[in-house]
Image 1 (cartoon, rainbow over the protein chains, first blue to last red):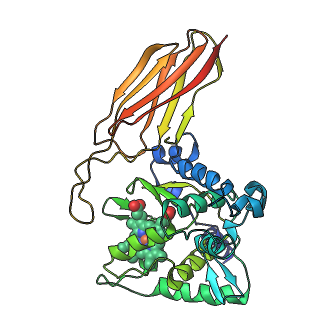
Image 2 (cartoon, rainbow over the protein chains, first blue to last red):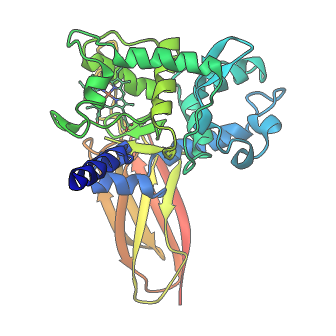
Image 3 (cartoon, chains in turn red, orange):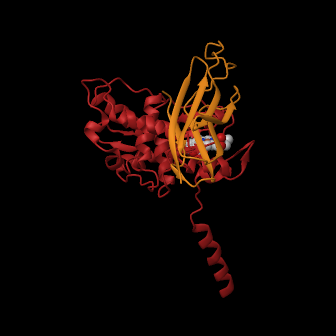
Length: 250
Length: 106
């Protein structure tokens, strides 16, 4: 009896250990090396562009990001690890890129930044890079909780002609293969990522569109509340994992 | 100017084999891809990379349309004497860029 109890205990303590793994570890060693060494990581090209944009005034009469926020290494440290965040004033959640877009429009009064444009990706990767190595720490207010719950329900809902939910691939079949790719656990640790297939930097929303098109579902629009809700849920799922921006992915 | 990531040791011992890494921001448009309107996008690639050490060519490479965007190249040279190491990328549409670093050999 005692032995059975011990065996049970052993089994359950293993099951409760953290089995989450970043998509980084699902890649072949060459791609991992590419991410880990800044002199080989093409995502750093966007980070450097973002740094230049951070310090530049969009027009002579306007203020630069740095004019308000100063040194990003101090002011932006840990910020990306806390997004998406709920904004009381507008009653909606913002992802990091959405916040940069809003800042540009409302505070800088500069030319708008389009989703997936080079400049927005560069600024987002530069800001997120300031959190590299820090644990993901989503906020805990009631606003974001509601958004997260919506994200979870979308994540669990079957969609598209293939009638599959995100969870059916990323929870039930993570670690297995789908044609040539291994199915990762879908942790949003490294965004924006340099995806080898894109040969460019892209956002989490672009990645999610790929998954939705893959199951023949109509993807949500860039910047939509649905995408931000999914991101809020994925960030909660990845709580405590390290930010990797700019990550490499296949 | 395209952004470049270079890794070149600044100081090394005479006779040692040193690794050099060079990555440049470039679309490497193949010339075979149609755009959204179905029209082929003109080829725009880097076709030559040259590394000179103290003025002498020590490494070069010919790139083809099959090379991915933002091409990365790594190779080794033998440190013989202190001097400049220059890297030149040449491509379509008159693209040319040169970066120079200095190696001190002791």
